Every structure is written in C-alpha cells, then in structure tokens.
Image 1 (cartoon, rainbow, N blue to C red):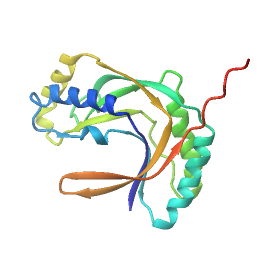
Image 2: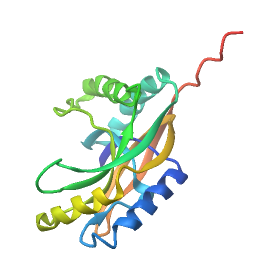
Image 3: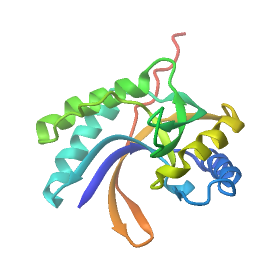
Image 4: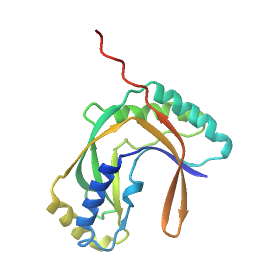
Length: 192
C-alpha cells in the first residue's frame, strides 16, 4: 500500500484554506485543487509498504512522539514551486519560527531510515499544497493571481500528533486513510 507520514490540521484552518482556494479558483480554472479536508504537511513519503511494515513504522513514530511536545506553527504566505519559470504547485507556507516541525521531520528520517526508507535528498520545506498545475502556458497568470493576494495569514495550528496514512489513487484523485496516529507527550507542568 502507498503510504506517507504527515501532520494534520484542524477544521477551522482547513476552512480558511478552502476559502483561499475559492478566491483563486475563478481566476485559475485549469488547476487541480487539493480538497481542503486532505490538506496536510508530509514529513516522509514512504511509497509502497507491506502490511507487515505497519507495526515497525508505528513503533518508530511512537518513539518520535514520545520525544516531542505539542507546538504551534503559523499558516501564512502564498507562493509557487518552482520560484521562477513554469509553475507546478501553488502552496501556502508554514511559519515554524523555532524549527520544531523541521526537527520533527529530521527525527522522523532518523527513526524510519533503519526500516528501509532512505532519507530525502532535498531540504525539508514545510508547506500545504493548494493546487497542482499541468499547463505551463498559464504560469504567468498563476503568479499574477498569487501576487494580487499578497501574503495571507490564515491562523495558528497546534501540531500535537503525527499520522501514518495510506494513500489510494483513484479517478477522482487520491484518498487518504489513517493507519495510525501518534500523539505527542503533554508538556511538563510548570515548576511550583
């Protein structure tokens, strides 16, 4: 089964992201838009895994979650990949001032690597994919539409768990099913 490890977002943030997509869709009708309920930040794409791999992966994620406390990130900014030329992806940024999400992703790589999943060669760049573009001719229109919206701030999200997802490809796009959730340990109470 095709799988990945991701952070989830609450319904209010997903609603705001959906509202942002609604503002862009009339100007950019040719894009493939991510359904708001499926928006997430991928920490590690695993590809095809066997059923027998779910338990060891889940155990590694339990170890990761046991070493993390919940933390906040700000959902802000709007842009495209790559930064110049043909636009492939429209994204919303994740402002992680203390780099805790990046640390979480790095730790994920360390714990999952020994299970047969080599680390990514590219630098981790946390973002939410709003849409994908397959038409290079509309890249200029995309950049103009994004520029007209400036740098929206969509709120703060508490990251308090990771999810191992199964991704099933179908005619209407991918659907995701949670295989396991791994909640971060609660923060230590303040000293008296």
